[in-house]
Length: 179
Image (cartoon, rainbow, N blue to C red; front, side, top):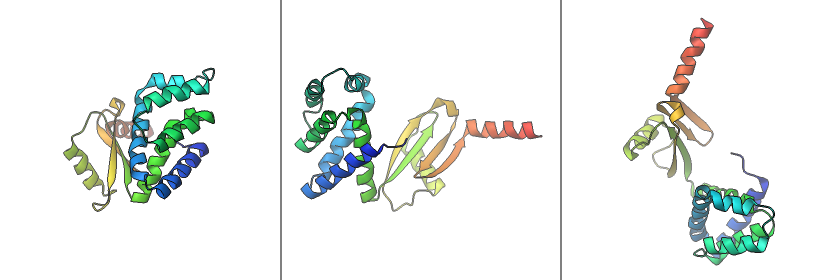
């Protein structure tokens, strides 16, 4: 998913501020919570995206939802709402997370499978793929997609290994059509 210029600019500004204030780690955790909450709450997204609800009401509700957050995170949320950018809040938080992980050298790994995989299986797949060096930190995002039928799709940065049954069946189908 492409991130908007708005999200990148807000995230960069937040990163610079938190680095100066020495609060990057705390805000990093809170931005992870923002992404999680925004991903799980369809109602909150609809509320924030509704154009005819006053910004003051949105700030009040967001203040209650995120009341345990630091003043830095709360001010970012208020600012995005005041500027009419509340639809970008999740993207801003995700972009901030990405920037901090880039600084830390953490690799983002996406593993799509038809069913949930154990931690041991995930580790074996990563070792076999050789896309993630053993001396680097990585965070695995597990995606369950029954449509791939079996196997997995591993994405590390801009590299991808598609070992899904669906792709293999499609390749066999293409071979039969050519012959």
